[in-house]
Amino acid sequence: MAEPAPRRIVGPAQHRERVVPEWIDYNGHLSEPYYVLIFGNATTALMDRVGMGPRYRETTGCSLYTVEAHVRYLHEVPPDVSLDVTTVILERDAKRARIWHEMTLDGRTVATEELMTLHVGESGTTAFPRDVGLNLDALAGPWPDAAGRAIRSVAPPPPS
Image 1: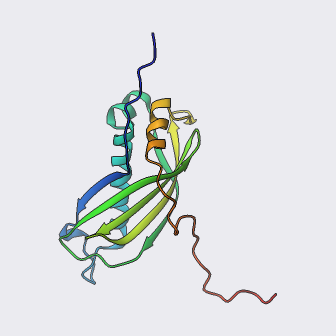
Image 2: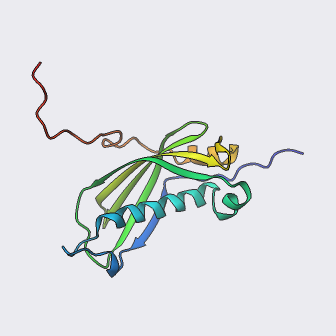
């Protein structure tokens, strides 16, 4: 019997989330951990979109594990707004996916998160199934200028 054709998806993944009052800090803005919570929810939405939703996770025992993350907090987020997160796949191999999330408020980028993730099952890392891999490939997007950046040193460079 022939393998079923994978479902085709197009364009970046999108996630929208409303900022709730409990997420506001003493400065009147979105508190630091909630940016990461929203990005985490966007990763879950990505997984659902590419075929790694709850049923997949339950039947295969596989999921994405984040092994490295870099968050940039660019602008303050006020209370009671809706944030949009656009997600693209920067690159991937058989077992890893490098993910880029961009959070916007009214079209203005307020934060970004770059992730290195592993496809992990009960016995460790494992290759993405063919259809999931093709769906991840369909979400490949342009490489943002800020991708791959590290935290800069505050010290001046040593003399040459």
